[in-house]
Image (cartoon, rainbow, N blue to C red; front, top):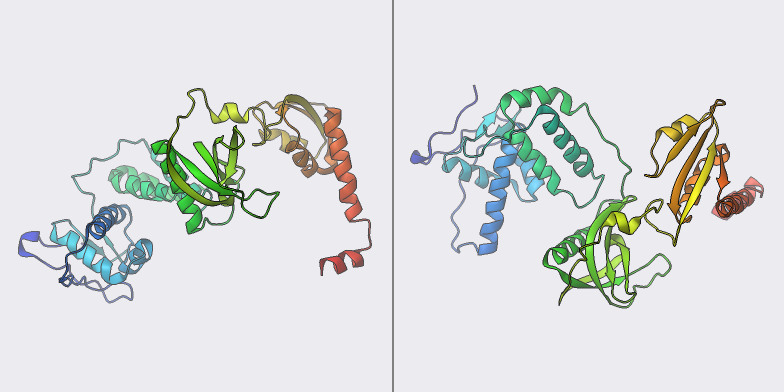
Length: 374
């Protein structure tokens, strides 16, 4: 049976942990001569509240792992654990899991989730946010821990055997976001919340140097094609543009208020673009895909307008309505010789021209290619 922390009326200390490298007795905090400022007190309160959630969600938290999570010293974690114990919360050491734990408290109402709902939320938070699939969503991991900490014991025991057996692998985004990119994300999110325009500089793919400062009214933050974008009105161009967050070089919130149009939606803005670059008008595209990849290609829904016609010889005709050909041309090339463009003629010509250029890259002897690469 796990040792319990005595009631707070006697001002107890936590029982010493077993002699392991990652656990030791919680020491009371040393009094400070100067009172902490408001920011420090707020930060510690946030940490204590999150600490409660973590201890309720998992049974293997050690002071060392908690220090790494909060980016503080282990000594600070010992003080926090002691503070929780002195308030009467039942902080104990689980000898089997070799970590501190807090049984579910009665002052937080349990979530009313079905097993399917709880499992879906946990998997999404863990695999999409926790494993870095989509940047700037670290808060989802905190939500996951809250969900786990408040699950009724019966439901939790049912989910534990399968939680580690389900994995999601969406297309990975760019490398881990830097602190600067995280600040840009939060700044744009704050501008949308307050409806205040931004002053930005931006480095587009066609130019290395940042642009001149311009005013941008963000409508939405949008994750697409492995990256985050801010979609909004570019005052300099007088058009709604999509700006990749990674290319924003400077950003500041202004005092200028703006309004997001009532009829704006990201779906209408993108329209029938293959991915995100919308062309001037819609075009019908037809492709013939041959075995052995025809069925595999047809099984995936590549576009919301996709239609598939299966033929007796095992081939498939795919049809789409696409706004612009700049993006779909590269997808067609990725299918190699098993794919032929039936319409429109413009797309067939562009694929053929690019295929000739690709073939020319390999027309030289391998030794010449190796010399060029060196």
